Image (cartoon, rainbow, N blue to C red; front, side):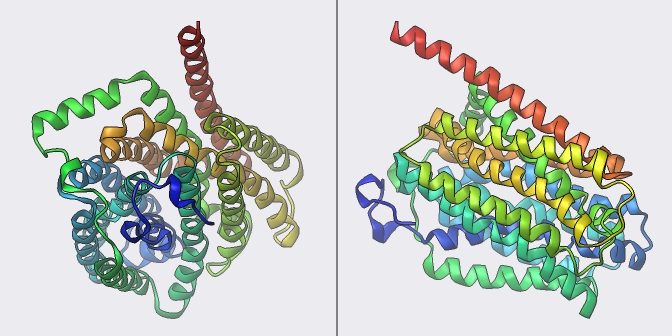
Length: 417
């Protein structure tokens, strides 16, 4: 979607392609979803338990979360381009170790390393958007990035399922290695530096500690980041539980993950497109409120379907459609919420864009890692218990948003008075 040059912080020649930024941001999600169809095969091949196989996802998310605290701040100090390229090289090496892993312990260690460096794109890309765009143009660019980025989670499990069926689970990690090499080449050629030397912050431990303390201690950040993380976990819980949800509850096969991911990501893509169209017409807060209204409708439908309609239904198109349709509605609402909250968070500290993106990413990923490693294994006994758990995440996220919105309105009235 076009972005008016007049609203841009950098001239067009200095701005990277949104498609490239989305591809860099998608590495993290791609590394999650591609291997999901292989989870059971990994457990069998490496003589691991189902819980240990689930931790292959959880340790990746943990590494992703821990390093997300630093990607943005390091990029604030040394520039965006070196962080992206260096992280891609390290991610490629970790992918090679995953491909050759002789045991579950080695695979877990390599996946942790993948997580440490696979998240650089998702953090730094958001900072690059704010380097390049301002105002409504930033919202449109963030929505475009999310819309393109949303393709990866839909395509990844399809590719993973086909690779698993044709060549086995090691081929999935070999594909991640190939992806990293392609992105290294692309970024080397096409990613400009968007943070001028004069705007960089020194990478001093004391200054960083004070900066992190300032960000994490601000009440508005706590409420917005918490709301965003818990709301995203509503969707991510289904991603983490997708092997059980798709193979056990829906009765499908390893090549059928597309019937879950494609519709859900389609809903997310449509929501991101609408978010971009609303930029400049509806406030960030209004867009978030609309997104929550849509997510609540989807969640109520999900609870009703899993409690009263789908129990006892035979596997087939009807069961799949009824089970997935409410999740599509929820994904649509989530895509309205996420770009706006991310911009609201970054706007709290415009001089620390990278650090705020890191702190927000860390918060979201720690909640997601908990959803993947702790909650998902405990709630997959039925579709209804999974839906209840997702509803609990959504209710918690909405509660934090409402508290934050009430505080913001009170401050606005006081300022106006």
